[in-house]
Image (cartoon, rainbow, N blue to C red):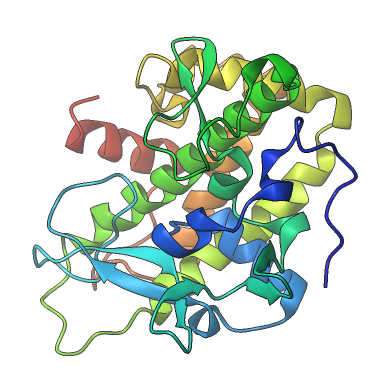
Length: 282
């Protein structure tokens, strides 16, 4: 079992919680979360993921063909003896204590829960499942939580961008005769394998500024990965990281050979990004 961080209950009320969020929420990981869990535990994604078919549109829903069906990733819920359900990674300890079994690499949504941005202010979600009065904003290190939320925005923007590029191609494919999610997982893992190398090249001290810069766009409901090339200042760590993400997604897309028969060569990075912008009205 992973030891909990040495914090006070005031700084981290999760230390004194029975685990409501692990049993009453469906947890939606981003692709980076799935990659981290697979790498750390050496397990297959189907060992801990479920696929939910959703009717409503979302930037995190992916398709496998040109049909209207779309799917999102959720962490599997295990059934307990009393019939209730709980996250597959939740550990049931004595005295009704519940703890996360993958705490150091838990999903980014779990890391940020139950806080969110209201403009640029950090607040506790009023619909959070935490015990009443558990969170006192005055006792929290808000700079830490702000960075967690900014990082959340960035990681889900990356995931939304790779899904958008993937779905652009899927709209050209005939209706699948059977469900096969392996090509999507192969594509997603190829993207994050490439990004792992790019992340290592970013100076540790640069991340805080990158997350903060990212938030300037997500605060307006924008994904900076969908910016036109001319709007990206590539000379900065921020601009280099953006271009590295776009490059990783497009190169992974090219490698899985999802192109129409007869196409002489894969489209360029700029061509694919422009095609996505055109399809979304950007």
